[in-house]
Image (cartoon, rainbow, N blue to C red):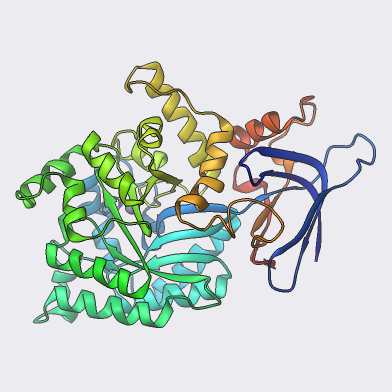
Length: 423
Ligand code: GUN
Ligand code: ZN
């Protein structure tokens, strides 16, 4: 199949490229068969812009109905808005919401997402069924909790050992879904965070992820009260990151959301393990959690990606997350919150949502840029949605800058995954 339009992407050396007129061809296996610039016909601005599919490396399917519930920091927000919502996340009503969620994700230009469901096995199955139907790529898992879990109030788990149930159900789900749909669906063992897990549960999650070649995803060091509570809950561990290190949860297939308050030693531990830090700036701003020092994380050698973290993040829109990435770092830099480092630019944010994420996840052979041989995962945007039309500068830097600061979901015309239209 042949797609025409302007193209904005990074090339194989990570350099930003912009072609105002180009042709992208896809093959029957869903790969990019060819990408080449075309001769311009006249000086008209292009009406379509193709960019690589956006990667949302941290988001909660079950929390979409609770987006933008303002007013509380992390732990009270979880107790007040999130746990009651996730506890009810079952049955036909949940099914309708799940279907809607995946439609929304595709409508925002997201082609790959790492997702948490809820503690329920049945609604996690429903999430995988709807993910399969949506055509998107997902890494996803049932939330594991055996302490302070909303599930302890539910009659269905009465009398059963929460740790065993969580492990058994996660294994069944992994066996059913990991690698399905030609590898588009992948399983992630998902211990929620240290405060809702016993050491035994976390150890088992790490062991099973390695056994199945699956992923691990969890939250780390998001908010200061949470960090203090983890210290009290695990007094024999040196730090929050040390809890996960001792549980065997860190590694190249591990996604760690937030990592705002890590010490230097923790950051070194996370980076040397090959784990990915998922920066969620809209969520961190919304809950008043703090702000990740991106330059410091980069200097430590950590793999980095971006996450919407819906429902703490108020929107699935990764353009919004890219903007907040730049604005947050600039604000922190101006206030001298961080030692060393520099500010970030629009192209850095765009790279974080595409190529950097693919690299961090070990998927850069097939995802993250538009290049021959990679998966045909791309978004077709309407530049008229953000470009006032009289901007003279059509350099790659100017185009990415307008894109990051002015684009949104309303600019997304089509979303394609593996050469198939999913929106
Ligand atoms: N920490 C533990 N659970 C959650 C969650 O659902 N959202 C966020 N933002 N942080 C968490
Ligand atoms: Zn989260």
